[in-house]
Image (tube, rainbow, N blue to C red):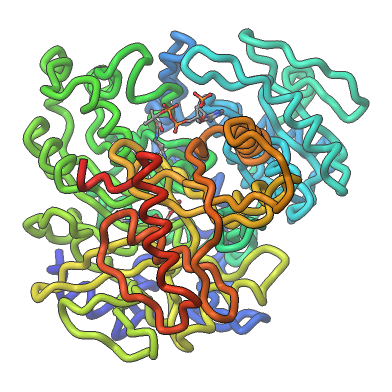
Length: 634
Ligand code: COA
Ligand code: AMP
C-alpha cells in the first residue's frame, strides 16, 4: 500500500495512469481505452469509450462472485416497527422485475423517471431498476412540497413518477399522492404514468388514468437484464439548491461515478465486501445516493436503510441500537443528528445498553461539525471520528482522512486532507493562490476527478456560470476556507446564498421568491444564521409595503405557512423580523453575507460600496430586540 503523499502526488501528476488503475477495479462490459478526453460541451469526460451498467455492478456482479446469499440490504424502520433484509440475489430479483415494469411502461434508455419516496426498500429498487435499463432517475426528497416537485418535473420531464403512498415523520403520516397530484397540476409538463406503492399506513387514491398500482404492475412484469451503457451516459439527475430559486440538476455519469465510489469505499471508508456500512441519511440527498445505495453495493457491502430519526423513534439510543443489532462497521451521518441525540441524552447513557464493538469508524459530513459535538463523539465512542467535506456536485468526498491509505491525527474543525484526485487550492477574490492560514475561496484545479458533475441538466451555461467562470481553470466550490501549516483544510462556510439547515441544503433565494410573493411584502431578504441545534436556520427580513395595514403576527404566520407549503417544513422558516430598510450596495445588491456575519458575531468588513452604513446597526438592534441570533452571547 502506498502512503498518502505518494498516492496523492500520483493522482495529480499522472491522473490518467492513476485512474486507469482504479478503473481496473470495476467490471466493465467494455473496458475504456480513452481515460480522459473532452465531451461535446468541452467538459472533461472520463472513460469515454467504456461500457458498463451500474445496476450490474451493484448486484449481478456480486452474485457472479459468489456473494449471492450475502445480505445486501437491511431495512430497519422504527417508524413502522418493521425490519427486513434482502440478499444480493433477492435484491437483484426485485430490481430486475421492477425494471420490467418500467420497460412495460415504455421507459427506454435516456428517459427520466422521478422517484418520490420515503426510506423504504422500494426506493432502492426504483433507483437500481432505472440504472438497469439506462433510464435516468431523479430522486426528489420526500420533504419537498408540491411546488418544488413541480419545478423538478418541468426540468427533468420524466416519463414516469415512481412513488409511495406516504412517508412517516415522528408518527405523522405524510400522504405523498396528494402532493404529486398537486405538483402535476402546477407543472406544465405531463407525465405518462404515476406508479404508486401502497403502504399500509395510508392508501393513496388512484383517481387519474395515469395512476398505476405498483404491486399489480410488478406481478405482470418479467425480469430484465442490465443493458451495457456508455460510461458518460447519465445515471441520475439530483437537484440541488443554488443561488437562485431554481434548483440545479446535477448530472452524474455511470462510469466515473462507479470508479470514484469504488475507490472511495476502499481508500476513504476502508471497508470491503462482506462488511456492514450504514449511512443514516435520506435517498433524496447525495449521501443517500452515494453511500446508502451505490457505494456500499459496488463494494459488496451490506448497506442499512434506516427509516427513522436519531431521536424519538423511539429514543436517543436508536442509532446505537441499529449499530449494535446489525453489527455496523462504518457509520456515516450529519452532525445535526448527533446534536439532537446529545440534547436528549447529554451523558450518552443510552449508549451503555448496546455493544458497539463492531464499529470501527464514524464519518460526519453535510455541514460544519462544531468542535463541541466532535469532542463529545470522540469521548463517548472511542473510535476515529472523521469529519469529511463534499458536495452534491462532486458526489464523493473532496477532503477527509483517507483511512484506507493513511490515517492522520485529527484536528477539531478541520476536514483533514484533500482526497487523491482533488487538487484543492485557496484563491483570493482576484484569483491569486493564497498561502497557509490565509482564508479564501476553496477551489479545485481542473480536471475534476471521475464522478464529479459534467454539466447541469439542460443548462450547460449555468454549469459554466456557477462553477467554472469565476476562476478559469478551476471549479469553484462555493465554500470558503483555508489550509493550515500542516496542510489540513478548514472549510468555514458558503460564500453564496446556499444554506444548510439540519443537514438539508436549501437556497435563501428560493425562500425569498416565496416571501416576496406575499401581497403585503415590498421587499425581503432571507439570511441563514447560526443555530445550536440545526447548524443554521433561515431568518426573513421583511419590509412591509407602504400604506398596507397588516397585523405583524398575522403576516408572520402567513409567511411561515407559505414556505411550508411551497418549499417544505424542513426549511425551518420560523423567524421573521420587520425592518424599515435593507442594507444594500449603491448598485442595489442586498448585503446578505454582512447581515449574517453581524448576527453570528463574525468579523466583517463594511463594504466600500454600501449605501448607508448606519443600516447595519439598525439591523443588529432589530435582531437583538427580537431575541434572534447572537448565539455566542447567550
Ligand atoms: N418529509 C416530510 N416532512 C419532513 C421530512 C420529510 N422527509 N423531513 C423533515 N420534515 C419536516 C418535519 O416533520 C418537521 O415538520 P414540523 O415542523 O411540522 O414538525 C420539519 O420538517 C422540520 O424538520 P427537521 O428540521 O428535520 O426537524 P425535526 O425536529 O423533525 O428533526 C433531526 C430533527 C435532527 C432529527 C432531523 O433534522 C435529522 O434527522 N437531520 C439529519 C438530516 C440528514 O440526515 N441529512 C443528510 C445529510 S448526511
Ligand atoms: P450538499 O450538496 O447538500 O452535500 O451540501 C454541500 C455543502 O455542505 C458544502 O458546499 C458545504 O458548504 C457543506 N458541507 C458539507 N460537508 C461539510 C463539512 N464536513 N464541513 C463543512 N461544511 C460542509
